[in-house]
Length: 637
Image (tube, rainbow, N blue to C red; front, side, top):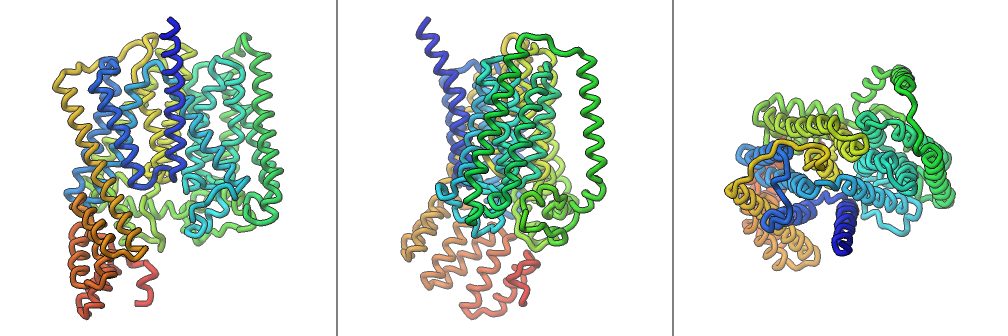
């Protein structure tokens, strides 16, 4: 019995620690945005799935039909993404996007396998990981000498003001912090030790400080949607409302006190900003402790007492709805929508108090223009799209602003542009099946158990909203948290929650699944190894070792023969070595693999000019300018 108890404790600790460590590690690695980082985590996920299935360590028959349905729809979406390589302009980009989707699918499958009876531990683990990321992010602002900004401030001056460490993107950091709000509300609302419930509320002001210092309207909106969704989905709402009231008051005080120290908020590297940092830190710590302590006292006083009557709840909800409607009318939504649609340059934000001014502004930072361009791309090819990963090239050629972007800042419009209507239908169907399953299950669960399902459902709803207005789909750690919650929504239920319809797992189906998983691992390993060789080549070229640089670039090309980037590196190294004819041949091969990349045509023009082929150079330059007509490189003709 002691052994069984110890084994059970180890399992609980692992289910708490593993998601926390993975989320923190991904976030600290720039959100796992880079290709090698994504490939690494995908390989780990799929190997774990292979070991679980092959060893029969878990009863896969316990997995119900909803999980298989969502997994099947996501698999079809991934397959369509891969197939788009056959009609898109770049097979390399399509394969990379397939690998992104297959990572999320692997996370989904892995969490489904381990979610039975452990939703609370998964929720606590994810909340712990995100809270640790928020803590490190705040420390980097209060003590900037402890962390490097990784050169981000030089590339993006705005990053010196807006908090973005360690993800490297302020909105991504704020949205990740916002996803923790429903998870912390679960810890504060569900029956349990007072210290745990108070901690859930105490951490809310710290998350609000992250969102404020990031000056992220998307983060604030995501937090509001997640909190509202958890409140509505929970069956015993009074504890959630109490946690929101106490935590919200703590957030308001923390942000108000921080806003009073404008130098710390807007010029953190200045002498006055450093001077104000200690007081700002003390205010934040006090706000967290007071909020947590106040909620602990409230729990101790009200525990065991009957909840207010139904009519009091209805009256409170009515007051809340009226207040919300009044707030919507007060902000003049039509005027703010017009401001949102304006190009970025037409709405200047004061720099003396940028963070607060940006939070209160309605400018869309070009999003309306990005969305219009994605809509145009969809209308040009409504059924099959332009191929996964193609929006960057479409925007460069057809966009309306002289800015470089890779993503449409809306998952759904980008999918329409790249994969057409069928791609969007598959993605929306997967999300819809999961949400309908969660809503159906919430009606069957007991009051105490609803918290464990309401929290991940609220997180996923918040992510679905955030993905509509920003590129969090491409910010790996944010989507990994969302897909872990998606798995918790449809994974096996405890016996008290009833049973779903089961899919009969025949041996042939298991073998097919294992074979597919091995193929996915191979698809992830190929670009991973190729990218590592490309980086080796770039490092060798930087130190002047042309022979080693060429050898590594050729190795990358052999590993990933359908990609353009290895041929580009070969051309650049050949050019550096003085072998211009070989360089011209290599860049021609790169263009064959990606004819829509204007940079390849620009390199071609340079090589052709060096070789004295002026007519060909002019043609290549015209092609480069046609693919990116707003680039400052071509303004002088």
